[in-house]
Image (cartoon, rainbow, N blue to C red):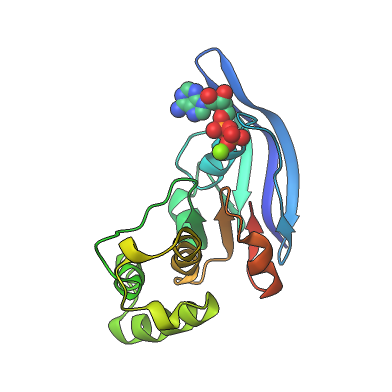
Length: 177
Ligand SMILES: Nc1ncnc2c1ncn2[C@@H]1O[C@H](COP(=O)(O)OP(=O)(O)O)[C@@H](O)[C@H]1O
Ligand SMILES: [Mg+2]
């Protein structure tokens, strides 16, 4: 079973070819690093695979679902940690996680349990009631990983997140960085 399958995936912005016919497969349980200099097309690739951008041509499949034809199924199957931080700094770490879980329709009881679990996973249990505006940069990145995992995605996308190696040591979800 593949976590991700990409075939001749291409994205053009007007005249600019941002992603030029890439093909690769990632197996379930595999941690996959997509390396390249600034402007190479990494973020554009993640945006296509997470259904935020429509490919110009080629195909992408995530958790067995086509990223154009089965967008909703893909979205339910993934977690995304964006290149730009996307936390509510006026909320505590715990509130950020509970809000995200609520958006995914997770019941209150399960929300509480999962929040505890993921806070523990990223070593932020003792900071759960601290406002995110008082977190360090590394703590924010770890909280974003926790948020990306709270709905138990099959695939986690991490765009430019330096904590990937740390996370891999803890085992778990397939990933693309
Ligand atoms: N929305 C957009 N419109 C036009 N050009 C874009 C857009 N997004 C990205 N690009 C261009 O596509 C190329 C790849 O960018 P990007 O995927 O962000 O690279 P990376 O994440 O590898 O640094 C760059 O030349 C960038 O300027
Ligand atoms: Mg990028």
